[in-house]
Length: 276
Image 1 (cartoon, one colour):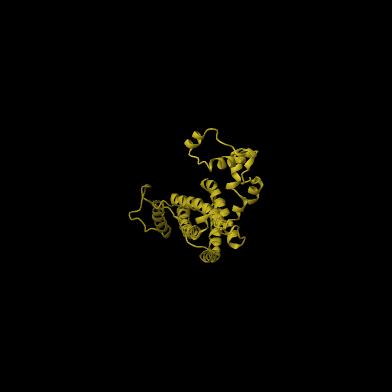
Image 2 (cartoon, rainbow, N blue to C red):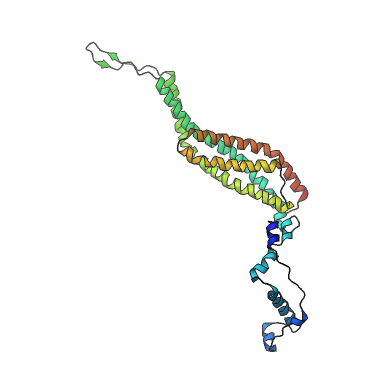
């Protein structure tokens, strides 16, 4: 940004009024009505008119460098006020700590939703093992069911247990809860990942390439990649589902690995910044 702004900077305009170009208001009554004092009106008008007359670009272009001066891009000098303070610097670690815990919760919700599908697969496999009830044959050749129902087999007991478990899982609404949690993590995670880098720049005037920055960038990419697999997962792709789980597991590993470096940065924030 500094190089771009420096390219846009125009030659500074002279602030010293030229006495030879002083303009006088033709009518003293106009000067009084406008509220100009006799000593200052000519000075103010001549300075403003000289600046506008010496500029070859529109007024908006002339004013732009004063707002985007290259020296402001150096940051860390008090130019940004509270943006360089400790309060804003602590928002990033607080939000990311909450997102870490929320990521674990989202993983639990996703695993429970996966159980809804896998339990049904287990039930279908067990049903194949259940033998049909024997049918007794009467002397006249007609068939009739046995007088007493045989005790349920282990496979049937397991089917009953899994069926009840699946009903409870469906009641939990884990599919929608997992989707909502993932959306929140993606939105706030990407926002705060970018915000953390900007805050570092506000405080120091530069970024620090290192483990924390690289791991944070990788986590952000993994969030996007995992979210991109959702359409294929909704179509029933087991490969996409397994890859989604793998990417999020790697995400959590990087998150845990990043915590010590994040704590070190928080200590530096307390050391080199002031409230607010």
